[in-house]
Amino acid sequence: MSEEYVVLIREPDWNPGEMSAEAIQAGMAGHGAFQEAVATAGEKILGGSALQSVSEATKITPREGSTPVFTDGPFGETREVVTGFYSFTASSPEQARELAALVPTHGWVELYPVLVLDRVS
Image (cartoon, rainbow, N blue to C red):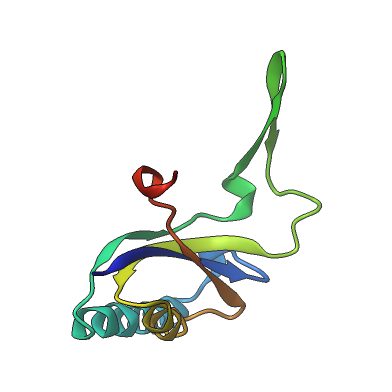
């Protein structure tokens, strides 16, 4: 039985508005290869998207008994940003790692197994 995984794509610098058409095409080819590898493995991509620049993000900090604090990006403490994500299935943790390693990045990716809440006791 396949399990669900999420891979977060992290980049040291990300401003898609400054990317050349060639860089965008090269990135899309890499993402297409990842998506094809998932399908070839008999697994599925459940979702995924590229994210806009951190300058478009909002940090929301909850405060107990008070209104949350909203801070517009960019954030001074941010050195690397999440630039996109995929949710996909894999038949084993080893297969999930192998597939996640194919996601193109100039930084790194983080792979998380999804917590299935109805299995938590």
